[in-house]
Length: 529
Image (cartoon, rainbow, N blue to C red; front, side, top):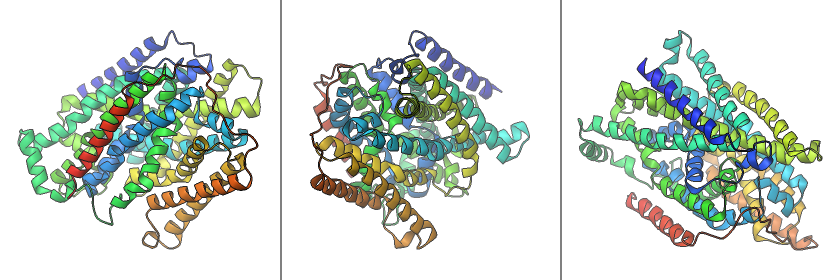
């Protein structure tokens, strides 16, 4: 009962603070609703970006992979810092210079409206069919396990899953659809603090359990007893082979941190470039510490449970129940619930933004007022939320290793979108038709690869999906370059400065960025065996 009361109390406190913080924001305008009035500061941006990224599909999924494979899966966390630095140095100045609300808006300016609509459609499809359902499913699995919902309510595991999915979905929808970006960002920041505290408690209590109350003895015992789990390189059969770090891994990271609307929207809402760059650099630094929360607990679970769990994705919830004092379970569940909501409502808010700005305004009612755009976007958000809540329980039989599964399926749209954004900024004369061809070839060829892998020849007969992503990226760049040579734009593209915000860079952005990159290399080399 104490756990449930602390859960409800902390969740309500976050909601009240978010409501108070957003009362003065005019959310009848596009900037007010979608970008929080372009007023976010570095701390809010960093907290929101991290919580948008850090949710149960990552906490549960990545710890599940660490349970099976060890520290080598930290590549998903540690290498993210490099992509964030590139985003802060290269992409964000250009985004803010163009006064963008959505990434597809740039594609309209650079190519044409059809290209923008195709990309918006890809984002929306990915959010509704892949990302949002997986967040809901993995989150519901964690909450149901921690509170033992089936026994508490006297229902089956399947019914408990449906209840949790719809409970999380409804609360998240209220935040995202009716609160706008600022409500999401403020609640994210509060939950970020709680998640850092709660997330660090799990490995601390886990190591103390191993060391009979002494954390350092527990760490020494863990390393000595499981040296194979602390190799950052891994073998050829690893889910993240070392060679992929130099191919598709960095492309996936650049897409996620530099072009994914759900993530970059927080930086687009910065009050100026300095705050945006400082926020991203802070997020990059904290990201290097991420494995402590999303990798180490999985290894601790392996040691404590001796590899006896039926499903690796059970490792984290099982560890929480094993090592956390009962009085803290409610608080941590509330923090985890906040992380679930963060990823769900952030992607949902971005979906509302993409539909309202990029689809409804341009294809349904070009004369619509900003208030009307926001209104229609909210209605679409309700539809996509309900659809994702129906889809989520249906993925209960998804392959083991939800995090890796999510990354692989996301390749259907991540690499094609990254290709045309990068080429769009680096070239001036490649035409719109090249972007369309690259989008369709990228999506189509990757779907062919997945079809061959899972239904025809099997996994062993084809390259790792991260290598395939890199191959398709290079192929699509070549396609766009050839089309640009044969049929170039009549006029060179010029990125205009809209003067929405000040784009003077932070004077320390380059040295701080280089320092973060050096730290990433050091961490990786330190754990290499």
